[in-house]
Image 1 (cartoon, rainbow, N blue to C red):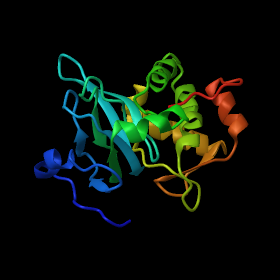
Image 2: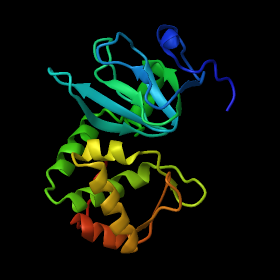
Image 3: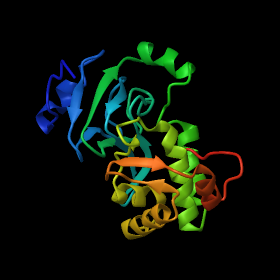
Image 4: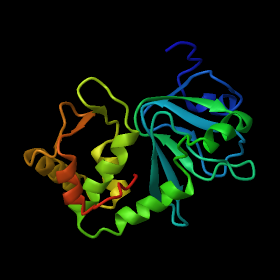
Length: 215
């Protein structure tokens, strides 16, 4: 990639809000790209890596409510302020765009990670009491949003983030993914790659009949 103006850091946060258009910015894993209630009318579009949309409750506990993947817009600012906190779940790159640029694309189907439908889908996932079916439905839903990368799909999500999103433990995620591999449902040729080998079998594990749930 070219024209990457800065490596993100605390000192760069405020000035980065003035970068508009196709200038590419970088964020390291764990860094905040924007915070809830921060003033801004700009939209963040992810180009690579993954982001996590967070909301903090009154006790300061953070809730991971959605993932942002390449090609997706993080959220729509409300009344000139961000509604969520966006953190880099992995090293990522992104651009800041004005509403006039983004709005027409949203109308033609560009994904909005913080949109109502995407937020509601987490509630549907969590309504599944059987954790393996919850994980299977998550994989089926997120696969169409992942980019191809060598052997399989690029899968930039950690087991810790998956566990937080799916309200379980990293150990349960690890055991379930291993079981899915042993059953021939998925393959993980590398830690950041995912191949769905048996979609019908994974759908049975998820208890899905027709509709793929989105993550």
